[in-house]
Length: 104
Image (tube, rainbow, N blue to C red):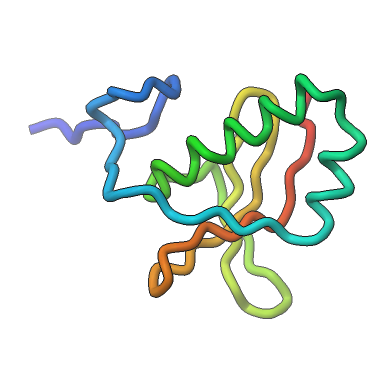
């Protein structure tokens, strides 16, 4: 029996391949505010919308994971031209976004 690939190809709200157990609360690092302020309003709204969608589906498999100097594993996910770096705090149901980079 062949394993099913659960990697998302697109971010559709009703996708059957996404594990959804309720949205996590978004928490942004301080540097994110500076990044967002430098963006035009339209891109600000787009980035916040993508972050909300990530919080709605926190268990999605990331593209890669790096270990921070604090020994915390930081997930990185490319979404619509932005790389979101984040870690999940399951105990308090938060997704902590540590960095957002423009990948375009």
